[in-house]
Image 1: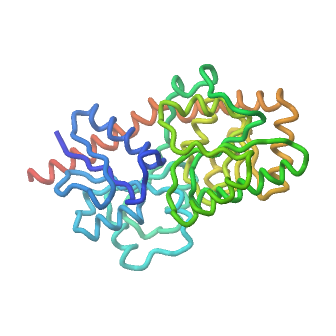
Image 2: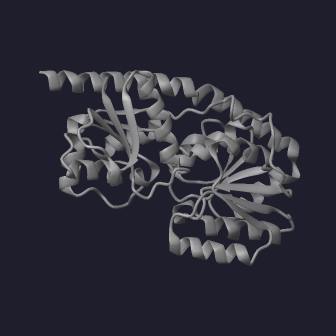
Image 3: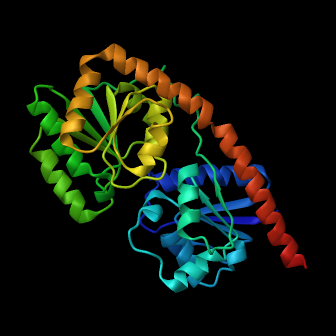
Amino acid sequence: MGRLAIVVPDETPEAGGNWVYGARLAAVAERLGHRASLTRVAEAESGADLYHALNARRAGLVLLARGVDPARLVTTWTGTDLEDPEPLDPAARRALGAVRLHTTLSRQAAEGLVARYPDWSAPVRWVPPGVDHHAFAPEGERVPLEHPALLLVGGGRRVKGTLEAIAWVEALRAAGVPARLVLLGPARDPDYWRAVCAAVAERSWVAWPGAVSREAMPRWYRAADVVINTSYTEGVSNALLEAMACGRPIVARDIPGNRNLLEPARAGRLVDGPAAFVAACRDLLEHPERAADEGRRLRRWVERHYDAALERRRWTTIYAAALGASRAACSG
């Protein structure tokens, strides 16, 4: 039995995407008979056989600085990793280039990482995230909402563009569509959170229930007329995948992560600003049959390409090989 430490950045809440993803990976390791822990980087255990950093810059580099052997480190590059405009300094570049394995959530991201750091010896693989298609399904209970309702998952985070979402929905309402906005998720940035609270207090058509349990999320997705995403960066958004599995139409900011997710499905709307957002939402809300058709197509795409069982099989292979190699090195 090996010890696997799955490590997320310190500011990650337990409702955050990296934490949810890490919990799935911990379950994979435990099915293999290993002991897995999921912690923030400040609390990471010492002496693990393998470390998996769910953010190369803000978790992986910290672990390396603490003396973790790069041969015992796997990274997953997230959206904020990949779209960070600041290049790695030479020391960080050398350090990350020596780790056991880099992973991304999409093929395009993996290809971009290889192109950006062609001198690295560490291999790069892409492992698409999976969705539980039984829990996140179009049929089932729904929370009561006033309609038409647009849902944004991500809470009060600057990177999620929450204030832009409020402004864009306000533009939609000014165009004659009486849409309401529901914000889900915890506050992460105190200053930004205060600004979001002030904006919500001035607008009766915005609701912020806060953090919602994982088990309750399908009921919120199903209740929404449209699920929106106004993020500045994303890897592969768990929230969008879950909404797609629930058969909801999507309107998302046109950024690489969202583009890589939606364009292959040939469904969902990518928008680059308030005018395009208003046009896309208006079209979906005024043509429910069109919205339903897009939702069905997104559901089918997720079923084929983002299956939880496939995700488990791929990580089972990676962990079995990496932990086996680590134990062999120790015994040698």
